[in-house]
Amino acid sequence: MKKHFIAGFILIFAINLSWITPLYSQPNTLYFMKGIPQTKDLNPARPGIKSGWYLALPIFSKLDLSANTNNWSYNDIIHQGAGSQSDSLVWDFPKFISAIGNKNFVFESAALTVLEGGFKKDKNFFSLSLTEKEFAETYFDQNLVDLIYYGNAQYVGQTYTSGYMGVGAQHYREVAFTYARDVSDALTVGATAKLLFGMSAIKTNGMNLQASSPANGEYLDVTATGRVDVSAPLEYTFYNDPADPTNSSNGYLESVNSVFDANNYFTNFSNMGFAIDLGFAYQVNDNFQLSVSMIDLGTIGWKTNTQSFIEQGQFRYSGVELANPINSLPTSVSVSDSIDTLVDKLKSTFRPDTTTNGFSTGLPTKFYVGGDYLINDIFSVSGLARVRIYNNMVHSALTLSGNALLWDRLTLSASYSVMESTYDNIGLGIGYRGGPFQIYAAADNLISPFYPSKARNMNLRVGINLIFGESDDDEGNGKKGRSGRRSGGIDRCP
Image (cartoon, rainbow, N blue to C red):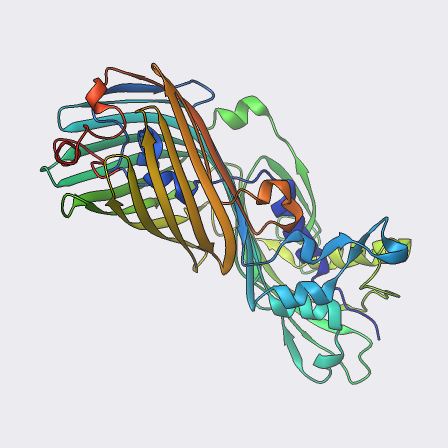
């Protein structure tokens, strides 16, 4: 029986996209760290200074690194072989099928803050930052993988549906202004207004394959539907439209070429957007603080270098013959040629949409709910729930942590997280301040960087600050003593 790799190249693209890109985002462990001004990024009502001002070291202000899947890893599909194949990589589709769910995703994001500074005076906190950000998410259904491994035999006389698949990715620049105020001794509120400038984006919608097979299973009649919006320095060539051979603008996609120019790309301010962060922190009593925030609620409108495609077409595909798809990598010329043919057939189903001149995209929006209980003047225990919403998919995480401030200079946080049904996430946050100089780092999974091929969740936040003007009693999120922690300051329960 022929194995019909009708969606194989899409799946391989999805897997490689996630692991060849940097692994970037904000660790939950950072949320309750003491004395770190950048805790405002997760809740604008929780900046980590009580007085004075800070300047994040230019270029090295902060770097966020993160990626996660729905409980599967690169190693689940491609790994080192055993026995006679111990010196090579092998495909392992049975293992991959057992690891994935009905709906699957790979998400990665990156942020590099170039400039950042802020200050706290009396009851008011202000900050301003400039950050480059990118993220990408690829999603696919298990039906796509089943077709690759099991072929079309199970769909003979039926209609196969791949389920929705696609990718959403953006690179944009963010200028953010944060303001927080101590409304009372117990309540602090904060907000961040973000002006966004889009650099490039791709957005898919309704991408789906339907196929039917005759009784002998020799081929698939495939119908492709969906939509793709792109804003990027690319040049497109189209086949002539069969209905109008003289008009290539309404034909089918033939090729895509880069026309990237660094100066034009990085000085593009035409794709504008706006986002907001909102948060509050409420001191319930001497020991317990409750905090809630919403991060990155906003959109970007894309107007430059835009091209929209409608995927709607039919073709017949005869499949790819693999002698042993489980234990060997397909390397023969015939397989390569067949995959190229399939890509060409799918590519020919994309036609330009000339009815639109632009599009808009949303951001991955996060919601945080946290509780922090003060054990003594040095140590607290915390719980944090996070929900991320993007592409109509909801991703959740729960983090428990212990947090300490030692000698008003060393801040430590140890955490345990449950993320996307993974239970092996042991994290650590550490920051040290000597005079005005502060360096910090936080991660939710300490093991993943040492075994990246098996990682399901990876993140890292690092940064360097210069902090000036705090009195000795103000260092570390609060004045010494429990009553001092409740009075006149943001982040009073550390």
